[in-house]
Image (cartoon, rainbow, N blue to C red; front, side, top):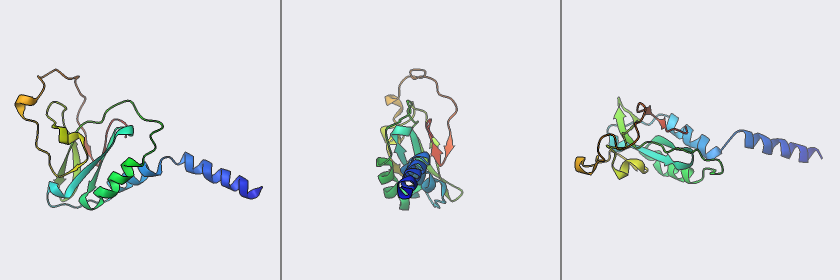
Length: 144
């Protein structure tokens, strides 16, 4: 009986602690990611929670694997903005990009800078819903 109670308490604690894949993704994004150029920096998108996690190149494969393991039973109803990675003062960071200026690569997990969309391929000014201020940092998105 004691073992059953202890198991139920542990299971409840694990559920209350949230999604371990998201916790580990956030942890990867929050630790130092030194860089010399933007090519050393990566962003991994986790679509269910509309989040983008900026990591160093060494953590990119692990972060992509974790993003694929996220519990998608309770997704948010928004889309994260496209993200460009940058090396700022020796550390990786991400910068949200206006939808109008983003290329397809900005909305996919990637390492290094992405070529911006050619001006002639951009939607006309005002064609997309206006966005609030763009964010920057290591964890970005409307669901983060």
